[in-house]
Length: 421
Picture 1 (tube, helix red, strand yellow):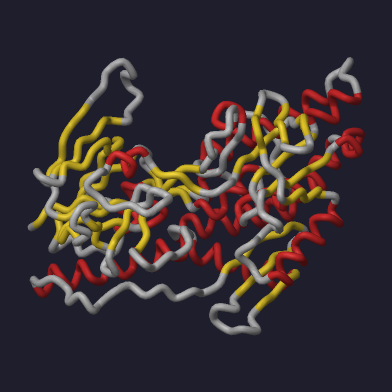
Picture 2 (tube, helix red, strand yellow):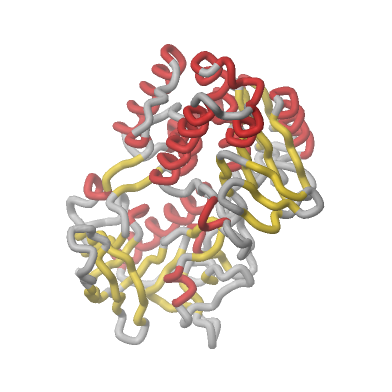
């Protein structure tokens, strides 16, 4: 039985009878990231979008650790434990592998802009959602204190989102719903001082969508009072304000940053692998990592997800692409184990674009499936039902599906919880 190091995205379907599987991850749970925006405002609770790794790893070995280095020559990875029991103690260990799958994801890109890492909130982890939720409540509680001037209230209740892609737009939509549906009842005197601004460097938001859908979303945001400022460049971020080129100082109470991806330190340190201009690992059509010198594939190292891309096949870094790659790799690896041979070079991954969607607030969404059918472009309440159905069906487990449906109903019937904890 061969030892197989793997990202836990593939745990459930890999044939455990033929592979001895080990999982290395710094966190012991899987996060369904498409619903992080909902979690950050209390539409859902964090347990709705997380599932423990060990739930799916009863027949695997799991190590809560960071992978620091890949030793291609000795077929081993060097790891550091991520257990907080004794922070002063640095527990390091090495694991051997016969096959290795790299699925480490990516971080939010800051473009080296001063102050972003220190003062902005991101939306990649459950802790990010908790931080945003706490900061939101803090802003309203601060503005409710006696002796606070109107100017201070307006500055503290200015919520800024940088990034006009699906994540930035969906967070803006969820925040609008939270304010209009719940906070407006609890802080009625502060509503006239509350405002939202969405910044993006591109000419329009939702640039990957059909232009009619992008325009529809922009108009809906404008009617809601969400300011959209495109073709703007952020020069610097300070603790309570950001500096916009040609606009100057812009105060904020909460800044959420969602502007593309940058690579994980492990990917950056993996010098044996060929990389594209953005630093992603290059693979062949069978998802095998390419050597940086010979450009030939390693027969036993694979990469997928946001950290990798296929050579001459520039695909978007989306969950849809990652999921299809995972399915392709699982099928092929199981076939290799059963039949005992490598796949022919002609059998390569082909992406099937099922479309893209984004929530835009007030029970409306935009859905662009023009890649499937040219006419398949939708907006409005029916699109929102499709958006919710898709995310519910794609959630990790039956437990998650039940919790998500329950909390959606609870939010609709009773509103969101604004407790600060």
